[in-house]
Length: 259
Length: 374
Ligand SMILES: Cc1ncc(C[n+]2csc(CCOP(=O)(O)OP(=O)(O)O)c2C)c(N)n1
Image 1: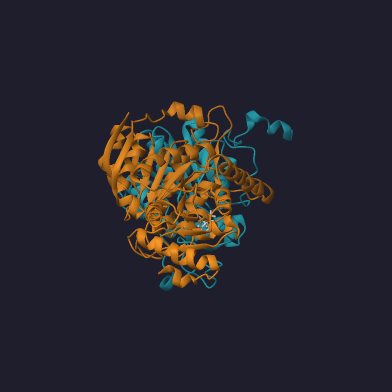
Image 2: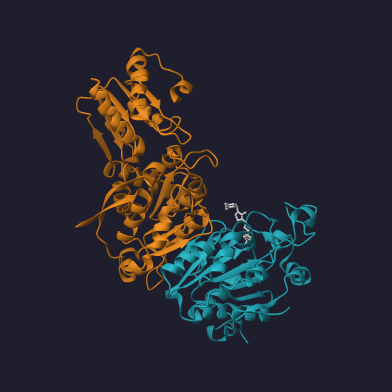
């Protein structure tokens, strides 16, 4: 069969989501951010809620999320997205408000805002991309960096004694009554991406039902920051990140899952 | 129609916010301004007007909530006192950069550091020279009475929305804590969601309909574009200087000596003017009501008329630099102020005028800064 025949629109299994803009993604090839963007925007598109959705972009690699998502968005100061989302959701109580944040943003500088938005049970979705590193600033240690992992600010590996252990913030916030749903997913295979999309969908459905915080962590690679090829980085993630950050639901319908 | 009440400055400001139809207040307790959030919480504004009032986890969270609320096109404000304002500065810079309208209130206390909870005007530099990072300014209103604490809320929002820029109400512990009569305005309706979308839907995040998407951001990685952004802000500040400068002249017509003072110091300096006149000294007072824009042309002109100027401030000498800049060495300019939470008396202020300006100033024998403080 001719190639042009094969790539006819009706044969396409994966195509660009309508709600993504035509701007070229600024992410490194192989990085999970682009996939998470796509899944988020697909959910918004499929739920037909674009007119009623406001996103909050962080400081981090995904600072330019607003360039790619064709919806109204506010760009936040580093770590403050949950505070900003709190206000937007209080002032537009019928809208879907989500933050999109990295691990440095959400679990280091913004820990207080994260915890308190969760504790108040703001009716928002938090999409949390955990790549174990500060991607944007060139690969420094994050609160989620694994023990022994080398980064530009832990060049001999993260030492627990004086740098602390990887922070499992999703487990932490899951204990707060304001959090209705907490889950950890990944997007490194189609199968995982489909599961992650379901989780994101569930999170937005929760907002519709006014349930409080839905917290979706996506464990992702950072092939540039980890100084690996995309394939190597995904394997490294499976071998090293997943044991510390195991995938699966942590809290569903306000009930903690026993692990 | 208005209602006459006896209130603290902080309470009058909070009540005015409800009556002006403000949509949201976010704050964190700190003396001497906690009455603002206390009054708001006690008044159940969510029932009176639907106003959102939230005690945030920190000043940082509060200013970012203001940023979020302002990005929806609604009227949002916060208040704090000096250490809390220092924490808010990153957020204030973001508000300026993202061109968001919002009102911030600083009921100043003495510093640096934890300092004191007593009144002070030591945050002048922080307020008018930008404070936060980057090329920006705040429109700064300085109330000198409980009435102005009330009136300036609406004025501040008018300016904030006229320019899509953050506005600072620079008060202090004296004006915030003292009780005076205040005429409160009638309740205004909050704008409906439809009205907000109609009026501000061209830029605010209201949900993308068939229009282009709206993005609130202060980021531009392209230097050429970033420079354009900064110049756009500069144009607003130029326009503020042309259209929205505010000041008050008291007994200036025949004045030979001039006090320059704002806020609580202006109240004290006004008393010093009458004490001076009783003694036969023709003193006047220029009270800047806006600290940016600053009445520099008015000062430049007054300098042709008076023999010397005393800048009266509750600090060790901050606004005096702007007075000197405006006067351009035409006449001697001196500073007098108590600090650390001490409030100068009118008698002290008059004595300082006599010592530093009338006697020494005119023969060019300026005292050193240290001796000018005490
Ligand atoms: C107040 C402040 N501190 C520091 C920075 C610098 N900075 C920008 S992005 C970033 C880390 C982002 O890492 P993460 O949240 O993990 O997101 P990623 O880039 O990995 O997606 C830092 C420290 C900043 N912009 N603002």
